[in-house]
Amino acid sequence: MILIDLHSRVPIYEQIKEQIIMLINAGVYAPHDQLPSIRSLSNELNINVNTIKHAFAELEKDKVIYTVQGKGNFVSEKPIGNNRIVESAIEDIRIVIKSGKAKGVSIEDLKSLIDEIYKAGDIND
Image (tube, rainbow, N blue to C red; front, side):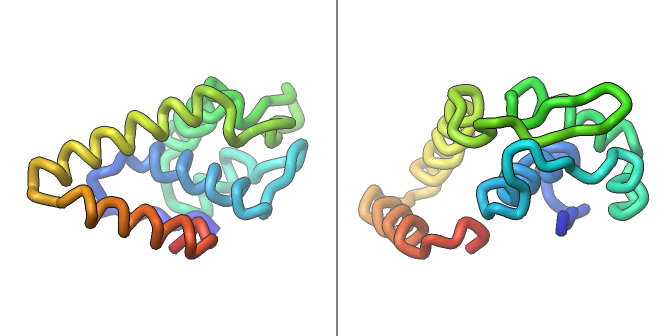
């Protein structure tokens, strides 16, 4: 379910973190569902265990997941839309918009893109 782009400028731990959030948003994981273990994800993705741990630590810091010692990692009660996630997403958007503006993207193009994304309804498009 998680795909890593080794050619992306986005760090691998960040790709994992974002994709887990997308899977939660899509309803693949519901509150209190157990996530795959760090070791199984490491084997499945052929990624270092420490990279997976870093992604999970970030998700836990943002209160998207919680850890039960000896049992694993679980989706939090209200994982999406919490203030930390929203603030982080807004900052990411701000950086991309500033870059687009510097490259000549008009506000009309930006508004069109926003409308297109929100009307599509599917978070993976």
